[in-house]
Length: 211
Length: 87
Image (cartoon, rainbow over all chains, first blue to last red; front, side):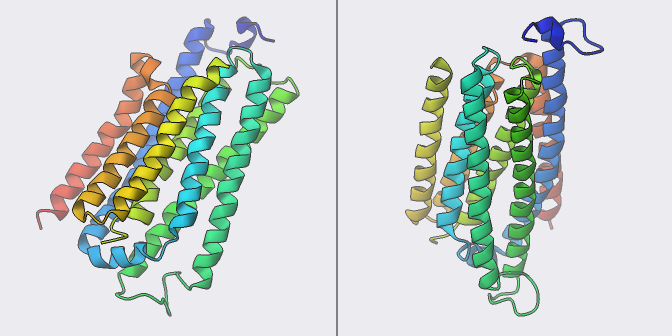
């Protein structure tokens, strides 16, 4: 199964080209995701420009400790994923299996931390709508963005964890060869989800926190 | 071992940048803090994209596909900003 010719799928005749095609297709998908998140980020930027003070007050009510822990967790997970993506084609089975397990664990750690943070946010009543505790009203806009952007990011991360656990299982069962391009594109997806958080962290936890 | 060493350097750099960006926000430099936070976010994204996602050693086709996302994003930003900033 480790023979490259066994990995070739229609319509490719050459494994190197197939790998290139898989990467190319996945980067197109990432570009579409960039447009999706880009729209959200720009809407945030426009509303922050229109309601600067309210967004600053909103931001001062997010929890920097949870945000920092989660940023460090995702940065670390990307490190392990890079070792997986470089080790797998070289046939390093133990590195691959270990790296994927740590990645999934760090991803779960992120979601648990986020869950605790959401619980705190809910207990403080930071959900836009009647009885919202902060003033002026535009602070609700900030928290609208907070919930949507972190929520959509968490869904992406959840999908990433499922994909990592899926290929981990297939690799352990020797149903997925280490040279498969699938491992590389799941790595790309994982890093992309990390990149989105690299933007969410400053705009939701840092910008103007200490004016 | 070699698959760990190079990424470890980037990992340490990322964690150092995380500390730096919190420090920059805490330093109460006003607009400069915000600029530094965004600049550091850009550096982190660059490190992850170029080194972790291997764009540094990818083919021209892959780099173009990656750049196309940013290129179209630029259209979205420039045209929308052209509306809001000129009102």
